[in-house]
Length: 119
Image 1: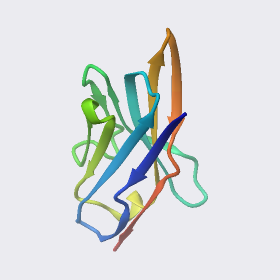
Image 2: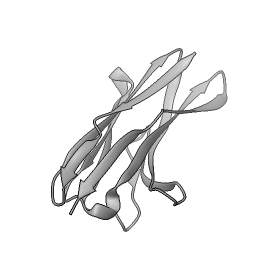
Image 3: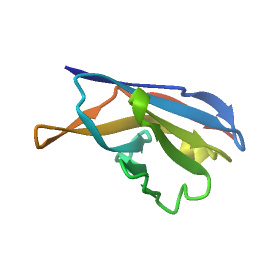
């Protein structure tokens, strides 16, 4: 079994920073890619960052220049550094990790971590 756990959320004032972590454990296989999503109350889940095993990253315009995704593949851990936070960044942040085993791709979600940005 593979378990994915996010941590690092909390309450921060606008302009502040947070660093989220996403740790995968178990029989993961080879890391393929990771994505961070967020979901605000009453809104759909939206993608905020992706990273591939080659280190290629992608961000939507809403967070570009403020958020940075990274991974420590040796530790099966990913991070989301969030700077210059805005109240609209508030939401539950979820990590999705994908691993390859025996030629198949498997994706796993964490339980989410709450980020609240006060104005």
